[in-house]
Image (cartoon, rainbow, N blue to C red):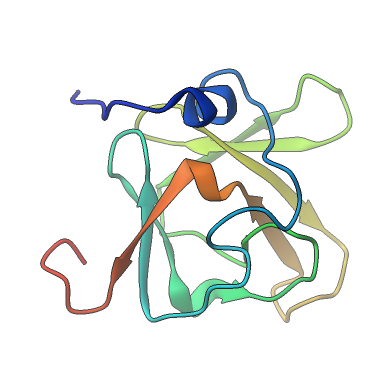
Length: 124
């Protein structure tokens, strides 16, 4: 599997399971048509159609592209971590029961874990 070279900040989030500061990520308040892929392996993860403004400070999606994301218990014992199903990159966490969308799910994702591909781009 080919993995992309990561910056130190990206490694902190993707490999060491860190979190970027709230409201600091490039995709927090970003709403253009396209898809979001894993920054580490280019796996397609989320459609812009699933993105919504949750106000939490991180990009939020109410669903992922089928078979692209895995959930695992977080090391803190209370949350559920989401990772890329292809390479295991840490993406963020998933929350339910907040009633923010009809799907009642918020995939809270670090901008440093994803890259945006505009609609009609050959990679879309």
